[in-house]
Length: 283
Image (cartoon, rainbow, N blue to C red; front, top):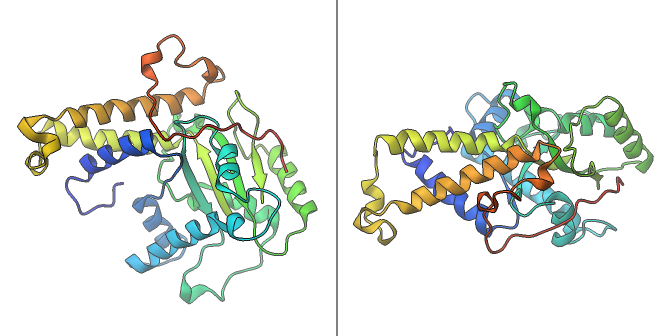
């Protein structure tokens, strides 16, 4: 969200996040700052083009639907795919990781990888396509709600189970305490992780800086939604995103299930949200 040439980007992000929070069943978050970082640091591209960063996006999105397009015994429809990843309706923003990453000119230079190597690297922050990992004490308490790894290639199922066991033994994954640890293996990683709230907090901070100065608001007053200097749409959007950030933070607490019961007004609902139950089975 930092990489943008549009001065009103914080306003646009806030208005968009409100609608994605209330009306979407699932959102895969890809952020330009992280994509550029990956292109520079991981692919060693000094000045990545739009085509090269877009190729990362297209790779992730196509791999994410692999289980829908090819025959399989699990995750072969969107309902099943989302139900295990999104246990609560509002926490439906997913992060992605992918390895090994290449661009067209490097396609023949991929080294051989093992299942454990792929699964371990998918958990590394340098392969995550969202820049929400702040190096703070608060960020270190962030936890996974669920993970789905889609492993492609000639994979021995026993190696998958052994890799999962070693990841558990090494405590490479920190899961929420109020739900079962859901790590499904079908690479690409789709994960629901509470640290994504830091990305939303950054969006709020950028918005507040502009709003405090009343900067660039004339661009919006031209539209009927903001006629007569009515900026309540911004205020409502800010409240919804603040509530979303609070809910992701609450997910890190073991008593999340009780969150919102004492003050129902802090939870906002919208049409179009999917509900699901985290699959307790580790396949």
